[in-house]
Length: 109
Image 1 (cartoon, rainbow, N blue to C red):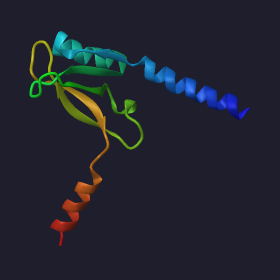
Image 2: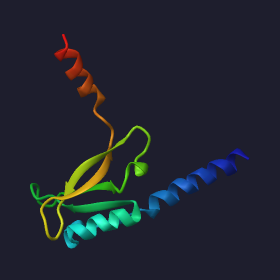
Image 3: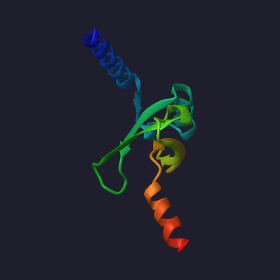
């Protein structure tokens, strides 16, 4: 029974990982990038770095907080698109609590 349950969990994780679509935002308008994220909920955007030639950059971008995992917050980010250098989108990040703690602790003493 444990083996069947374990196999079912692995299948769900694999299916979830395969389900996310990947796009190159530099071949889409900013509006299309935002609409695609809104329609699918979460996508992978992959593009080439402008500062380091040949370096691919990618991340998972989300429509809302519900697509972030526990402990993450939705964070404003910017990606290049076909019609603008910085198209506003959102990704999920873990908050930097250590930096926040240091700032509060050292500035209050």
